[in-house]
Image (cartoon, rainbow, N blue to C red; front, side, top):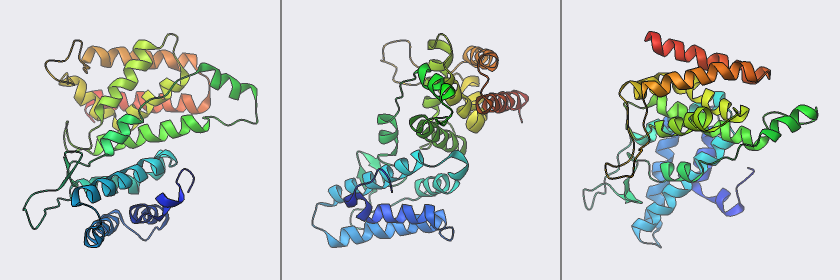
Length: 275
């Protein structure tokens, strides 16, 4: 698969997750069990300290997930979402110590070590209004371009995980990225940038109810001793972003962008009605 080296492709973690994606007969629950068996086999082989085995194992598994997500449109991410949700509910206990093994200080698999770290490391994208203009001027070019499509896929994955979280602050709750996306789109971009608007739409489309919940409780991120202002959802932001989305509807004529804006506004209305 594109983006993976030969050594990576040979790893059993990659093979388990790749089979999940490519084989319709493999369920997310089965894939989780297969991944657990991989870990057991790696520990039986030894060769490295147990903590290093778990570190490499968890890193390879989570990097594989995110790289495949990059290439997978939102509508086709269901099995990956279910896999992560099922994996997060899987608690591992070391029979010798009675403790849950950790990687990067996070428990396997209830705290999903490396997933949040890798997603955060990859959470950056430089919007360039010229990209859309170049596509519009050259009918041979597709929109969105590859880099933007991967960025949209990754945000859709995080948004769908966030919607599936049992509660705010859950291990698969990535609400902070919705805050960052909408803040950049509607508070920092002047004029509005189509690519940024599309990312914000994705968060409303797939996690609109969760965004509403965040705003209603005025959820604040960071630590109490962080320098102000700390990132925060508020109802004021909810209304500001909604107004920005309505303004975007008048700015961008691309059919796919218009469709995303309409879907996002529909989800906003549903959240406000309590549906």
